[in-house]
Image (cartoon, rainbow, N blue to C red; front, side, top):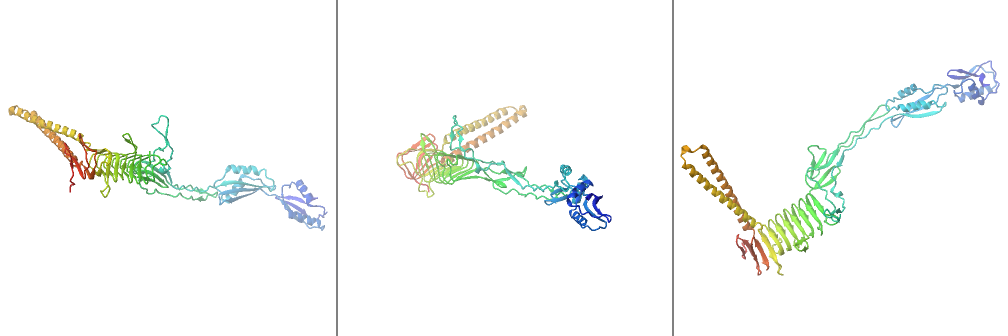
Length: 550
């Protein structure tokens, strides 16, 4: 029987044979488990090789000398810390005790200290490991992560947040006609153009961040990768705000083009054409159309409008100049044209046909102007560069300055109305008022003379200082009023004379019949054809000169 050989000598279980014992040769491995239980060593860790060796000794049948063989031992809970993932994770490994001590917090702390784990320890994980270890069978293995480090958090790169829309992202969606009571949709109106004005905020810059350091479970610091610092770029039409350099603002009117690190502000809107595909155009700046402005379209600009093709049956308005390289074409219904071009600084075109053109300064047309309504505060010229072509035929022309063309009127006897010096009547009114004011100022000087005579009638001893001073002030004021009235009258006279001298109609080749030229109330209508002609006005009569001045 196994029990006669087994003796516990802490922490071991000994199998002992002394020289007084004689082997019966009847023990084997199957009986050991029962014997261990009888001696209270059922949870000890058995050394299988030692057991086999001891059984061999017993089975040899030889008289044995006294021997002790350790065939089992009491083993405490085994605790080990494994560092993983470059020391970012600490895993607690526990092997159940063989009759030895169970897992204690002290064992865990000793293991942590031995592994140099000081950061990221999870107390809840430790408690869980302690509780789970109580249920471990001898030799059973438990693994529990108990500490976790932190990766370093990389910094963020500089970010740029657009505070304006890119004009190229304009959604082409037909708008409801604001003048329609039934909600009618204007298929050519796609909404306002995306534009900016000086001072408008374009973009905000959010600086790069340095990142957040990380750490390992052993306390080593993991340096973060800082974000990439990206400055604003230099872009046309924009600048940094003086109040806050984190903001980029517009330096001029124009179209915003949003870039990665800034915004361009184009002062010119470049289009291949203006049609139902683009919708109506409204732009703060110049508009350049490398094609035509097609029928029914509307173009409005605070700068110039430059068209390399035609303006056809469209409405164009500009604070600057309007240029149509090929021409301006419309259709007339009643007294209205469906092609209306208005510019404060001038209009230049290859020709005009059935158009309505209005300019705050000059109008310059190349080949011809037929059946159109022209109004200019400055000069109107219908003449090509070679000065051999330039027909102004039909329609109505209002000229504030000079009219110059190669041919005036039509071989077909179409009526052509020319109204020169449209402000002539107002000039006469202003001049008449100025002359009246000058006359009144002169009469006031006579009042001064009369007051002087009356004052001199008094003896000097009776004249008060107040009377003398009042007369002096009245004299000075009257003289100032007279000078002001005189200068205004002379200026208006000079202006009128300059206009009369310059507001002429010069036709280089031929004037046809049925051409009416108006100066105020005066009008002359040609009844026959004339070659070179220079029409002028002297405030009373319209004169035609047929000899070309040298």
